[in-house]
Image 1 (cartoon, helix red, strand yellow):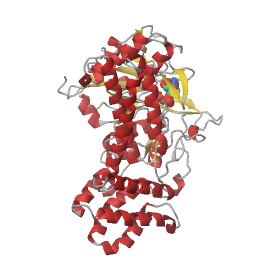
Image 2 (tube, protein in one colour):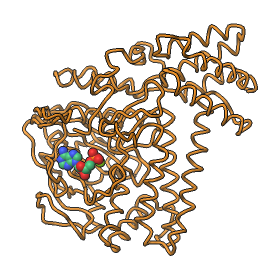
Image 3 (cartoon, helix red, strand yellow):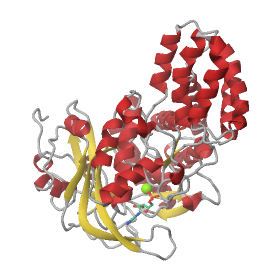
Length: 533
Ligand code: AMP
Ligand code: MG
């Protein structure tokens, strides 16, 4: 294990995925079906003029990597122009259900994994370049990624980490110097855009779809080998793989997925494309595409224009969709267990873990400790309903509530005015009377708050740690993109720093915690995003 930070081109990589699973060795990049294999060996395709745009200092320290100069050998590695001698790059084969329909073989069409690094705490982390050029899984696409979507993935995955949400990480954002042609609005107006590559980091990028493809093609040996690889490396506490261990493993995946979804619902994150190929086997948020953050609290909201018809992946649907996806995974691994029925209790684990975790998280957001579960559930449900009928910004509502609660507890006679002020600060409605139902809910909540033993200050502390002030509002990401496309990285840099401490006041950055401005209401990139990336 390295004690002094190294440059990535000098770091020593392990290659467990390649060494332990079945791969196609030809290095052929032509698109094709790859039956019989877990992955294909393939090298990144070089880009014109790689330049470092952003670097995750803390993640790099953890991985024992030193910050590279803007150009040079390390950036060449992060752009796929150069390999460290110990790397054995590969693209993984997987399938998936897209919008509920089985889509067959998908696979890493533009992501190429370089190998694994050992972090300062001894754990191993896979480094993957997204946008590194064609692979056998690119189908008709180019294997590349544009700056706007890469910047969004880089910023958001790190922001989610600092919010405490299970997620893949991002080490670097590199401009390629090449142009990529994209039809952003799918309206026949394709245009060149700057290309970029994100180096993503996770213990593994294995998805539900990596298992599904083997059920679809009847490759039972490969199914078992992949399950055993994932269990031995990433779930070692479960013991040596066996039919009983596969059941417990599925249960653990269900539990972790529930915790991830509870986090999403708690901060107002909408993934946007919860296809089974975008579900991590470790319960991590993975594949940041047309995601978005709730501004007005609206369970029907999705940023993904492709999903405007069905709203399958809207905010309020995420808990149900994750369950559906887990059912598909259960089906895929069912040949490994004695009786498929043995997998059913795990789905209950998902439902119960999600229910309990969401309940606990919501109590914390409201500064409450558990008293009467049924009554508290009714209170929370009433809030969710009332918020959905209002035009109140989710993040602002809870953050302002954290400040208003101690005031009102200390001086209940000022309650009326304080609640009105809170709603004025958080609502997008121009007719404040529309939020009357919310005032009534706040009065009910106040009575419940008075049953708490803790001091107003202690309640506030609890709430401030559960209700972030700073989230990656859709329009903020767009501002960072527009600046970066014009060569100005200051917006990106500022957001990176502020989003590292989302629960801190950081008053000098108040404007990044403001209501969404009116101009951003319908603007593409702010309110609506396509899958074009
Ligand atoms: P997604 O659901 O957007 O994560 O991607 C679905 C599939 O499309 C995955 O197999 C991706 O690797 C592939 N894909 C998306 N964009 C590209 C691209 N520009 N080039 C090659 N493959 C791509
Ligand atoms: Mg994907």
